[in-house]
Image (cartoon, rainbow, N blue to C red; front, side):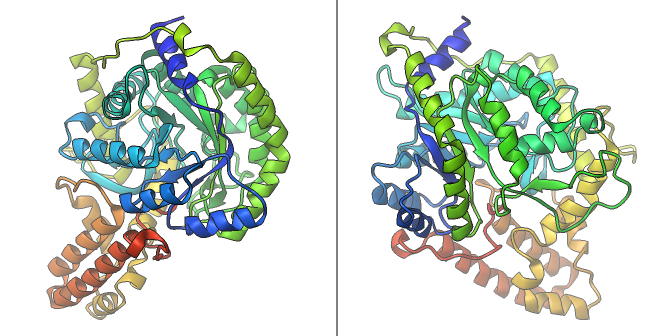
Length: 502
C-alpha cells in the first residue's frame, strides 16, 4: 500500500457513515422551510451538505440542527488555475473555507474540480480544467495545500481536519485535453490523499459531449469510466437535475443528434437515466469508501425536493443500508493505522511553464480572444463545434441574463440605452475585454453590477447617474438577502443570487 493510499484510508476512517442526505443552498430554497417540510413527511436527511453562504447564516443552521451532520460545499478555490497559489485573494478564500468549515463542524469540504476564473476572464458557472497530466498534478498539489490548511486550523492531535473532496466537474458542451476524466482523477489520486465526489449528472454530460457518444451506449460508457476511475476514493455521490439550456446551439450536431442537449441544472427534475447509472455505480465492489449519497437541490422548489427525496429513499435506502454494513465491516481500528508526516509536493519548472502556456491558450480560445498574431489560439485536443456553442450562445446568455437579467435589474438604464441605440449585447464584448485583477472573494453578481455600471458610464455617459443609482439599490438588496436580520428568515432575490444554478 502506498503512503498516499494509506493516508487517505486513515483520513476516511474518521468519517462516520452519513447515508442519504441533501446538498442544499442556505437561501434558495429557504433551508429552514425545506427541513420543516421534510420533517412534516417524517423524513430526516442523514446529512445536509451546505453551500457557501454568509457565515452568520451557517451559524444559524448549525444552531437549529445541532445533531445533523453538516458537510461544507465550498466555493471560490479556483485550484485548477496554475497561478492559484500566488493570487492575491487565495489566502482570503482559504481563511473563509476554514472559518465556515469550523462554523458547521464539517466532516469534509467538497469543491468542484473546476473554475469560474480562467486567466483574466470571469465566468458565472464552472468551466472544466484542462484534462492533462500536468493539470492533474497541479490540482493534486493545490488540494494538498487546502488539506494542510484545514489540518493546521481544525485538526487536533491525531485527529485530522475535514477531508478535502474533489468533485467530477460538469461539461458545458466541450472539453479539452488528452486524458479522459477518469484518467485525470486517477492521476490526482496517485499523489494526493483527497477523496472524490462522483456526480451522476456531471458524468452524463461527459458521455453526451464525448466523441465516443456515437460509438457506444451510455451503459458501456459508464462501465468503461468506472473501470478507470479510482472508485475506492469516492466518499460521496451526488444526483441532481439536467435540462436543456434556453439558448439552443446553432449548427449541425455531430455527436449523437438523437440525445438531448442537457446540461447540469439543480432546479430541474432528475431524469430516470441517472438512477440507472447510479445502480451501475453502486454494484461495483471497490466502492469501499462511500459515506454519503446526496440529492443536490439548490434552487429547486421545496415540494419537488420532498417528492424526489422520498422516491430516492424508497429506491436506494436498502442499498445504502448494505453499504453501511460493508463500511462497518471494513473499518480498521484507528491505532492500527500509521501516522504520516504530510508535505506538499512541487512541480517541475518545465511542467509548470508548459501548463501555464496551455492554460493561457485555453482561456483565450474559450472566449474567442485572438492571439498576438491575430490568429485564434490552438489546442489540438478540443472540438471546435461544441466550443462555438458555448462561446456564441451559452456565454453571452450567462453575462446578460444568468444570475440576473440585466433588463430586469436595470430597467430604466436599459430603456435609456435603447433610446440611445446602444445594443445591450455590446456589454458581452466589453465584459470579455476587462482584464483587470478580479476582486477577492469573487462574486459574479457584484462583478456584474460593477462592470455594467462602468460599461454604461463609458458608452452612454448621459445614463451614468441612473445606472449608479440602480446598481446601489441592487447592491443593498443583495446584501440584505445574504445577511438577513437574525438569519432566521432569509430573503430571496430570485434569479439574482450569484451562486444560484451551480
